Amino acid sequence: MSRMIAVLAVAAALSAPHAAAAQHSVDPGAYAAGEETYAAIRPMIADMHRIVTPDGVETTETVMLGGIPQWISIRGVDRDNPILIYVHGGPGASEMGRSVSWRRGVEEFFTVVHWDQRGTGKTLRANGLEAIRPTLDRERMASDLVELIDLLRARFGQRKVVLLGHSWGNVIGLDAALRRPDAVSAYVSLSPALAMQENERVAYARLLEMARERGDVQGLAALEALAPYPGEALDPQRLGIQRGYVMRYGGLAAYRDNGEFFMKAARLSPDYDLEDRQAIDAGGEASIQALLPALMETDLRSVRRTPFPVVLMVGRHDLTTPPEVSEAWLEALDAPSKTLVRFEHSAHLAPHEEPGRFLLALVQHVLPLATAGAGTP
Image (cartoon, rainbow, N blue to C red; front, side):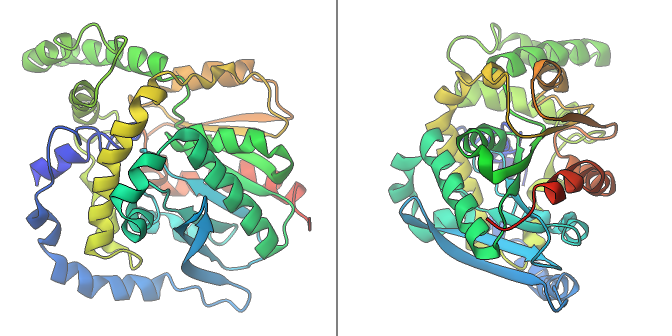
């Protein structure tokens, strides 16, 4: 199991969980362990989460985006509620199956759409890794998202959607929002990958401090061996080592030394079977290898103005995308409105770490913006 966790440590990379992917291969037996027990539980969860309201919507299906079938789920108690598209992190760290721990409350107020991007999960499984690998690039994936936005607007007869970009999802999410500002009522930037070089520099400095404070001689030596970090060419192996200490020191999930509760959550999902979960990890490895060089050059601090409201949500303990980087960006940003929400007891995974406060933040700060921007096209 520790080997599997290491594999998952690069691609929530930006969400810290798949980052050592390039270093190890996953033991297939680790996936199958306990599968009969989880298979017995999943129908119970499906029934508990079933949308039963007359105007509700609950579907998991493929749609054509970028010329290939891609999987989405759409759930909510009232199809007239504002659409919220959750753009997952990673790259490759699907949220569709993992959202079972927090989604149900949000679905009372929004029609929530999860999308397995072309590099992960059910979408990767449907198309095959070799067909997908050459298409893993930022521009193509942002275009997929623009197509999804327009598809949902047409299906539900709504003029605008809420876009929520988590970690890596902020990169293609903000790209898509800036391409189609007329279709975005509010943009939620959740623990965003904003400026990779600066994110890594700030996090690395803090990790060195924490290693010294803890008296972690071995950890300090391992971290110092990475210097200069991130350097000009950060490879998945060095990133994986750094992300291992991010997790160990509570920078992925606050007060925890691992991310297993998040990485294993898809086992409970009624939408995911064994092969779907395996495709998350295969896609995480492929996505990191394909996208890491371009990601290290990403610096969205160059976005100085947005024509739509921005809500920045950060975890105080986040060492994956340190909040001081994105907070400085928000301070300088020119937007119709901008709001900062800090989760005091979260690191990088606020919806999972503080689901109640995450829901409250959406209802207090995002729903009024979404409602104001609602209406038929």
